[in-house]
Amino acid sequence: MLRFAPSPTGDMHIGNLRVALFNYIVSKQKKEDLIIRIEDTDKQRNIEGKDKEILDILNLFGIEYSQTIYQSENVRFHTAMALQLIHDKKAFSCFCSTEWLDKKREEAKASKKAYRYDDACAKLHPELVIDNTNPFTIRIKKANENIITKDRIKGEVTFKPDDVDSFIIMRQDKTPTYNFACAVDDMLSDISIVIRGEDHMSNTPKQDHIRGSLNYAKKIEYAHLPIILNTDGKKMSKRDDASSVKWLLEEGFLPQAISNYLILIGNKPPKEIFTVDEAIEWFDLEKISKSPARFDINMLRHINHKHLASLEPKELSRYVGFADEEIGKLAKVYLEEASTTKELKNKIKTIFSSKEIPQEFKEATIILIDVIKSAPYFEAYDDFKKYLMQESGLKGKNFFKPLRYILTGSGNGPDVSELYKYLKNYIGEIVK
Ligand code: GLU
Image (cartoon, rainbow, N blue to C red; front, side, top):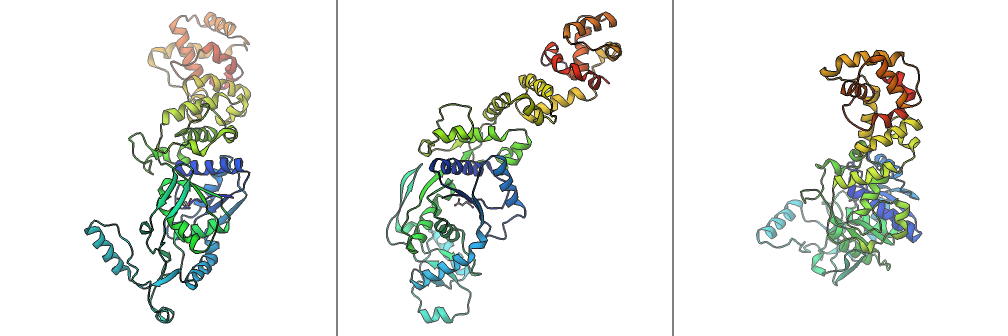
């Protein structure tokens, strides 16, 4: 079983979508199920509706999953496991106040040492623990041997016992901490491999240690994906528009192109343009680069352009707001100068809107519009052109430029002779 475990705390980031895609691909390769676990235990950070938005995005990207689990529904298991650990003397109640712990943390910082909990409450008398009505957290006892994790991208990673102190697994309000809930849930769902972002690397020994303390014999494998950098070489953050999947979709990037791009970066695919189904055939986690991937919007535009070009005209027409083969063919011609559905849509919209004509062609335009309005239907552009020239008396630049403006709303662009093939049935709507 594999899992994708988003927190419903904001817009879906491309890094998360990349994690979801990799989980999906590997689940298909291993012929194991993929579950979605909404990590909603931190109530203060949850944003209403974000869970649905994430699931909608997964559906749009064709990421199939067998089940959705809300982590908050597992709290009774988290509590039971915490009690089990206390019973086994592998966890203890900690009465240290937040102020006290903050003070210790400051002291560690001042002496330039990494803060570790000093185990002050680890050996308290059990009676004191049971009778006490003061607020307390539950801490798991620190590891006393190395914790070794197998990472499919980073190789074998060894953590020393001192890398992990006796950390909190249940807060004062008896809600589980992220590490505890996550470690227990991965165990309960019988996860075989966890694929997630590199920012979780430091949580891995803690989660491994929790399961070890619960006597879970199975070793879960990991794959921590390197972060994605922006063009300035900094981590892609919320401030980078392109980090939001929603933004990319609104800008007119196709889901299949975004997927293609996210599988391509930091990887060595056998070809540049592919579908997720094709990637399932050759994808190899071990080939993912250990160093950060770099986001390049121009490369994404190039890939989007290729995917747009491979669409059937009818399908392409839907992306620009029509359901018409001819408009799809027209849009194909405009792919000469557009790389997103938003840009294509604007081009097509300009054709059907009222047009801005430059002053120098205004007079000729008025004459030409009159002629076009009373012209019969012409199948061939040459006949149409001949008729218009004859009736208007216009020629050369004074004929061709106004004609282009009237038909397309622009002074340059694809050949009018090429466009006419797809516009001829719409002349009445275009020239008003
Ligand atoms: N909920 C975590 C996040 O969105 C992911 C945790 C995990 O994959 O283990 O970053």
